[in-house]
Image 1 (spheres, rainbow, N blue to C red):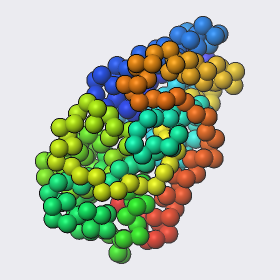
Image 2 (image 1 turned 180 degrees about the horizontal axis):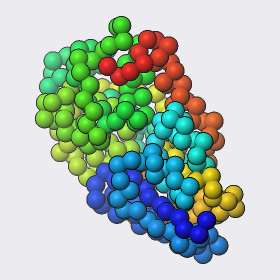
Image 3 (image 1 turned 180 degrees about the vertical axis):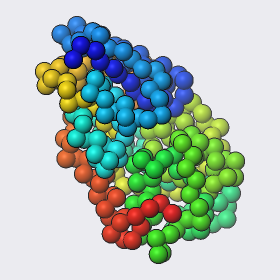
Length: 274
């Protein structure tokens, strides 16, 4: 294929984080090109709302997806797994991560200090196709649900930042926030956490994978993995700001843990976050 695209849409928590990720991507692409990879790569700064369509494109050279579409929604059939980032953030272990269970300060003051205490409260969730915001929370809640319900309502708010804003504004009571996102918020937007309290964490899961189209030849995939490693090591200050330790080579089978979360929730009679 003569023309490729690349985009990193997942951890652009602030414009500064977005700029750092784009710089890392550009460095990786330049290293990749110098090693013999294609130079005709369009970096998409605004990849659009239909990320599943983006990730399924046959000309996708590099992007980062969530483990839920990768494992549960069938994306693994269209892409090849390149690498998984390892972060220096509370809740991470190597290339694995958790979501932090958070409640509003008001809910905490009313006794919501464990997840079990959150029965009948209002949840805020970034999206139905998110492991960190939906699948991990569903898995954590499932043992406490009754007749398929636990919350009084679930609001789908579009992002983890919006979930935190909903808690702070008194529009919701509880959410699950990707621990890497939460670390970025602590670093750059601490005011969003002023009226939020942490009450626990979800199960450990493999982190958000970097992927490429299956049309990318195996040799190029290897060179691209190496380019990501070199780009990360090339700028220590950037890696520190991104809390990026490096990249780990996980196997596709490792992402079965995300499917298992969904399966265990369904087995407990809790197929939907509700």
